[in-house]
Length: 290
Length: 314
Image 1 (cartoon, helix red, strand yellow):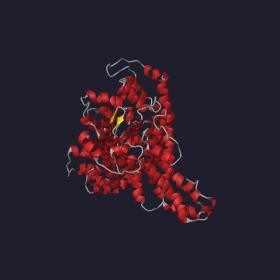
Image 2: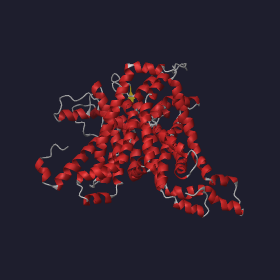
Image 3: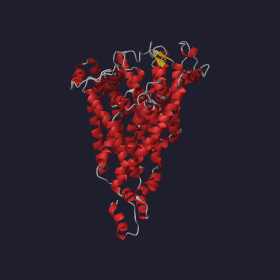
Image 4: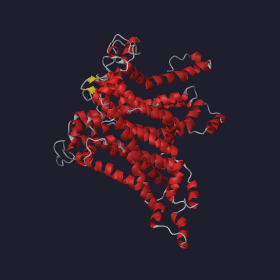
């Protein structure tokens, strides 16, 4: 990036040139590298097959945009079912994760009881253990309780990585909230549980919100359990459904595939664009402070 | 924090207020703690610890999809060590992890420093660069699969049209290049996380420190070296450990791009474990493969735990 910089230019202290070289040029590089593939996804989804597979036409833009691939997706595949499945799994497992993880995070941050340190450590370790370590036994464990090939298996399994994450993030968040208010409320007659429910939880709303967003997107994006625990097409989630049904052997339906990838990405992208600040503050409270 | 008995004691001694046993239980710091933590502990015992012990049992057996199998001791691990495919997979996994994390680190820190500057559209840029991280991994990977397509690769189109190359690359079909291609996509997905985490660390640095060091005569580089770097280091190391763990155990990107091919050139431990354990049905061997991730993971986890202990004590 520093190659085109002439020795004289640097010393000239031209602020506009300096900014172009050190801010705008690297920024352009990052935007092309990080966002470029999504542009590519978008124009592929809009291109008619005649343009898509014609080497003589420039692939960089669409001459005659069409919605054919989206129509194919909705009419010829189970896409709508996958969306409903993903929505349900993500919502329910997020709810479970918050209901279990937020109070546990509060307990680890505020309450003294024997073994709390051990429990905290165990939860943190579980958070760091990747799902790829456990998917093989999980398939068998779920099958043994009659949960094979149903979307409900995912609702049960996703909390195994969401709950440790929420607990850990929330215990970090509760530690950043001063406990004075809860102490005052207790002097005024509230029980410990009451102080938690009426004072601490409302104060922790931003933290709970980011824990919820994280959990929702983690479940929305999850792949290996969704691939291995569920095999019937009607029970699939978006990531698995799109990949399995739109790639058969070595044949890829590129248009519908990109349309599906795009639509499957939109909900989480929207959620994040609204909550990008909570995302960052959630990271500082949890992932960063530890 | 006061202890629970002092808060509850006056009520009991005067006996003017009668509390039920239940509310006493909930009001005691210790029992409320257990009550709130118990569901999580139960969940982890049943759905993490138990499956983990099942995995160990499988790894020590010759179980297949068709046959429950018998105990074979460490035979699976011995066979793996003698298998050239496993050894290649192990090597691939380390190259994949080291390469991807190196790119994440360099580009992520660079991007964080850049986003810490003020410029127009900063909020929009910050939201846009997060996309690779938040979009479902395998769906983003599909865009790259299409960009790497042998016949219609847009990357090759650009390389050829701009006159840099005559034919372009065989991104995923050339065994030597394929591993680089998949690790590049993994890095692409990980850069935003590194950047946004380090950015959060940068923005937490009090501005007074820069002012003070400027008064003391520190130049731009010295301020970076003696103020920025040491203060961002804890955040950076945490992001680094998480990135290593996630890359080392990654499944979706390799599965989406190559499924381990061509000729096992891109197999990593997670994909080989899936291939062997579920696709081919050798459950015992597959479980053994994924368990061999454990030593590396344990070292990282313990290191991270000790770092956190130290920072909370200090």
